[in-house]
Amino acid sequence: MSVATTVSTQDPAGPEVRASLLNRLIVRPEIGSALGAVLVFVFFSVITEKFLSPLGVATWLDDASTLGIMAVAVALLMIGGEFDLSAGVMTASTALVTALLAVHAGWNVWLALLVSLLFALAVGALNGWLVMRTGLPSFIVTLGTFLALQGVNLGVTRLITGTVQVSGVRSADGYASAGWVFASTTDLGDARIQASVVWWIVLTAIAGLVLVRTRFGNWIFAVGGSLASARAVGVPAVRTKIILFMTTAFAGWVVGSCNILRFASVQANQGVGLEFQYIIAAVVGGCLLTGGFGSVVGAAIGALIFGMARQGIVFARWDSDWFMLFLGVLLLAAVLVNNAFKKRAERVRR
Image (tube, rainbow, N blue to C red; front, side, top):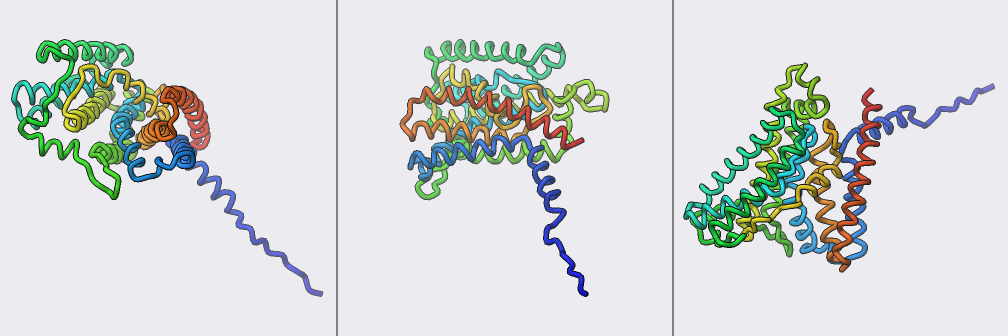
C-alpha cells in the first residue's frame, strides 16, 4: 500500500518577508508624503491635460523648487528640535544685500553675493547662539529676527532707493556668470527647467546623505530627540544647533540669489509669510513638531506636493482660494499620519 505524501508549495518565509518589507517602509518618515504625492499627481493628471505636458511639468517643478530648497533646510532644523520663523524674510534680505551692493554701490555681482552669504550665515549663527545661550524657544528668538529683518529691509531700501524695490542687477558686472549659476535654464524638449530645480535636487541629495550617513546626522536626531540625553553622551549640542540655523540661512541665501538673478528685481517685503509654507512642507514630509523624527527627502516631496497642487488648481481653472483649504487639510492630515507612523516605527524598532 502506497502512502501519498503532500508537499506544501507555500513558502513559510513569505509572510515574514512581506512583514519585514512593510516594517521597513513604515519606519521611513517620508512614506506618507510619497503616497500623498502619488495621489495628487494622479488626480491632476486625470482632470487636466496640461498637467502632464512638458510645459506643465516644468511649471510645477519650478513652483516647487525654491520652496523645496527651504523646506529641506527647515526639515533639518525641525528634526533638531527647533524652528526658524525668519527663513522667509531671509530670502528677501539676502537678495536686497546683493542688489544694493551690485546696483547702487557698483560692486561685482559675485562679490555682492559673497557679502550677502556672510550676512546670512552671521544672522543664522546669531539665531542659534541666542537660542542656546538664553534657553528661549526658537519660535520667540526667530520671530524677533523676522521682525528686525523686515524692518531693516523696508527702512534701508527706502532710504537708499526712495522706494521698496531694487532693480537693475542685469547691468552689473559679473551678472552673466552669476546668472548662469543661479538663474539659467535648460531646455528639455518643450520644457524649460530652471536652475533652481537643479539646486533643489542637489541640496536634497546632500542633506539626505548628511542626515542618514554621517555622525553629524546622528547628532541632529539626538539633539532633537532629547537635548539632555544628547549632551550626556557627548554630542556637541550648541555647535550642532548653531550649524542648523546657519543651514536655513544658507538656504535662504540660495533662494534669494536665484530670485534676484532670475527676475533682476526684489521687493523689500518679499518672502514674508512663506516661512509657514516651509514648515508645512517639512511636516507633510514626515517631520514632527516635537523634533527627533523626520526626513529631508520627505520635505522635498512635501514641496513637490505644493507645486503640483498649486499649479494643478491653475490648470484646472479653479479659484486659487481653494489652495489655502488644501494647505489646511494637508497639514492636519500630515500631523495625524506622522504621529501614527512614529508610534508604529517605535513598536517595530523594539
